[in-house]
Amino acid sequence: MDLVASLPAFAVAVVLISASPGPAMALILRRAALHGFRGAVPTVLGLEAGLYAWALFAAVGLAALVAASEVAFVVLRVVGAGFLLYLGLKAWRTAWRIRKAGPAQEFTEDTPPGRKRGWWRAFGEGALVMLANPKAAAFMIAFYPQFVPADQPLFSTTALLALLQVAIEIVLYLALAAVVGRAGAWFRRPVIRRRLEAVSGTVLVVLGLRMAAATR
Image (cartoon, rainbow, N blue to C red; front, side):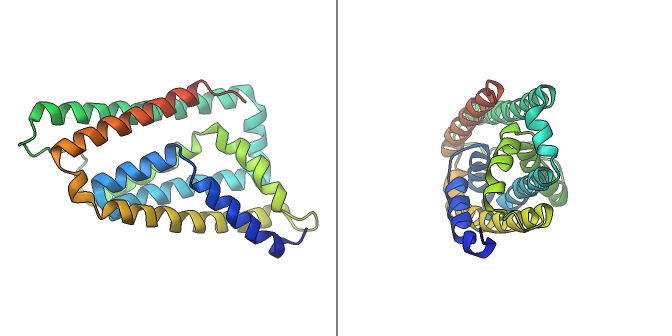
């Protein structure tokens, strides 16, 4: 198989995979709706940093070890599910606080002081959600070998393909964040935000429970 000839199929597969609903999409939509396009950028970059790390792990065989090890799989599953449940419960708590404050009151979120600290917090959330997902390990093992020619070095070819995937997903996710972010003022209205927090919290909790119950 020629690497260049396989790139269009690889790009189409990445687009289809990126468009599928999951924790990444839920995080990006919530972040863009509540914090605008700029607020969603660190979340997207954190998710993609985690994805690229899993791709490199797959190239050196670490992802295969994680997928094969029952202990590692369970640990990642519990950590990932626990973090999604934490984010979901946090969103529910925010919805409850907005409801108690009343529709006429301005709601102030409990965020850490400093724009820089908030940026890294959002980046870390995205990276942790991706890195603590054992299904990402299994996906990388199954996905990348299909596009790596037998006569090409595994690690460098996987790293290049992963860079392409990261670039495609960053463009797609930031475009989505830009569209959602344009309606940010509407999403931040107390009544709308309360409903958004309740819905996004429910989605994150369901995704967390599904990850907790996942099997290989």
